[in-house]
Image (cartoon, rainbow, N blue to C red):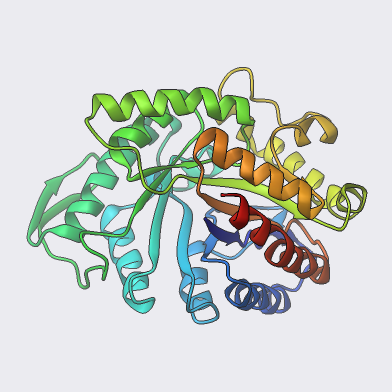
Length: 338
């Protein structure tokens, strides 16, 4: 079982980000020490009223604090970017980490980001597909010639190639059914999002398997799932400590329009917190969280968890306490059970 720590790194606009980066570096060091196998960071632009550090430079810097961990881009908003830039940036990170990069990619959903990069929601699917094709060709071929809708490569060879061969693993994030099918066709695995309930994931997993079969591809060896996670000595204590921060984060998701990217019937993040919690988060005492993880493994085959345990100004000591509890009291129980 693989466990990666998702460093969200989003803070209110009043926070001193130099000081908060020091906290994030401490979380990366602690992740490495406690036996987490990866560090994951997300990508958003114009996050106002929140502050957050940009994904790729952050991962490049934080890799020095967690040398045993994979660096997971979770996710690159690939439809916004030029493939030559992303290919060189992530190849550089792969070299700097000695071959520990995971390339997580997805569409994005915020109009402010599409507008800022001169593209549209309607273009995002085709642009993701052509950008991904270009990145993989640049990583695996020399002298690439390829004309896309918004780029042109004429006999291009990258400045540096990734260490991993043939290339870093590609995790495609997907919310909608069509995106799940795309993940099966084009990715090495489906990076399952944190927002959907287990019942929705179970339904979509059948779509994923069917599309893999149609493409004559085997089921991936690693099936990653991101979940919001908080562990405390009791469920009541977890609720007291985490609820204000996790609730605020999901209100922000709703305001940003994350719901619009989710499938019909499971697309309302404005629900009361008690409803959001059901069948969606890893939450409670160590025994409860271990049982929930075992359930995802046995019911869905998930064997790689990306854990979001830090939200919007949560006190640093609460995050580190939860990390210790998870590593010391959840990981061993899961290991014995599976």
